[in-house]
Image (cartoon, rainbow, N blue to C red):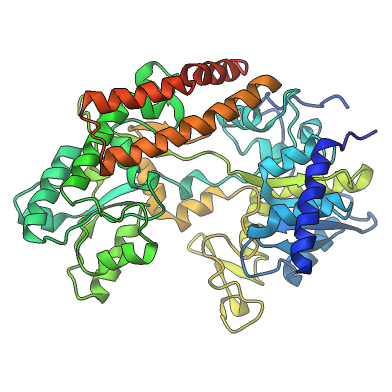
Length: 530
C-alpha cells in the first residue's frame, strides 16, 4: 500500500492554492556500478508488431513549440508503437501544475525536463518508477557518463537506499567550457599596459584606462554573486561550501577563508576606485549592455565566443572592433605561484526525465526502450534535428535544417528555436560530436585550458540522517544570511575586509551562528558516500 501521506498533503495544499488563484523489487544493476564496456548499447527497438500504446507526457519547457509536431510524434509512433501525448507547461508554473496533477490523481505517465528535486519529492510517496531497478535497459544513458560523473550523479540524486528515480539532462562537454576573460587588448596597449594575466595587471590597466576614459566601468547583471565570477577563479575560492584543493580537498565554507578575504579586499578596491559599477548589484542586462555600446567597458568575463558579439555591438555603435579572447589570456590569477583555475560545469542539470507508476509491464518496457534509444547517437541527433531528408541534411559533417524547417513563416518551422537546442530540445543526452561542430568556441577553449586546474561547480552530494537534514537546513539559512550581508558591506562599505576588526567581527558572527556544527554535519554526511 502506498504511503502518500505528508508529502501528498503538501501537494494538495499547493493544488488548492492554485485552484483558488484560478477562481479569483531487487535492482538488476547497482546504480553505483558505473559505465562498463561489457554492456552493449541497444541501437533501437525490435519486434515492431506490438500493439500501439499511448504515453502521456508532462513536459516543462519555455520554448514556444508545444511538442505536438507530427514529424516527431509520427516517427516515434512508427518506430516504437508509442503515441506520445504532451501536456506542455511553462517552467514558471511547472511545479504548481505538477503538484496539482498528483494531488488530483490526474498525473501523466512520463515527466520530462522537470526538477530533479520535484521528482525525488514525489518518489517518497511511491509515485515514481525506481529507475535503478532498470539500468540494464538504460545502458545508452549510463554509458554516456564517465565513471566519476556517474558516481556523482547517483550519490547526488539517489535516496538513502541508493534508489535512483530520475535521469537528469546531460549537456555535452564540447558545448560547455569555462567562461573566459576577453579584453579590448589594443586599448590596454595604448596606455602602455599589458593584456592582463593577473588581477593586479588588470587593476593597473583599468586604472590607467580610467584616466583616459573617466566613464570606464566593470558592469554586472544578475546580482551580488555574479560580480564575483571570474575573480573567484583567480583567487581560487568560492562563496559557497566546496572542496578546496588548497585545503587538501577538505569541505570548507569558502566565504570565511583567507583566500575569500583576499578576494573581498580586491573587490573593495575596485568599488572604491569606481571601476566596479556602483550599481553592480541592481544593474539590469539592458543597463549593462548600454555600457558596452558606449565604449566604457574594457574587460569582460563571459562564455567563449562572446567577443565576436561584443565586436558586432561595437561596430553598430561606431566603435573600434577591438575585443579579443587570446589563448594566453583566457584566465586570470591572483596567486601566480599557484596559477589560475577554470570552471568545470556540472556533468548533469537539475532537471530531467522520470517515469511514473502509471507505467507497468509492457508499457513500462516500451517507455524504457524509447528513453534508452533517445540516448543513442541516432536518438540524440533525432531529438535535436528530426528526420534526415525531411527536417535536416548533413552538410560538411554537420546536421543542418532544410525546407520549411528554415522558414520562419511556416508554422512548423524550427528556425530560431535552435541552433542551440534543436527542434525538440536535446532531451536527456546532447550529442558530443555534433556539439564540437556546433560550438567550436567552447570546444576549442576546453583544449586550450586542458592543463589548467578546475574548480568543480557540481553540487556536493550528502547522505544526511533525518535529524541532520533538518538541522543543517536551519543553520545554513542563518549562516548564508550573515554571509550575504557582510559580503555586500565588505565590497561597498561601511565594512573594510582589510581591517582585522571588521573581518574578525564577521567570523565571530558566523561562529556564533553555528558554523562549526554546520560544517561537521556536512562533512559527516559527505563522508558516508565514500
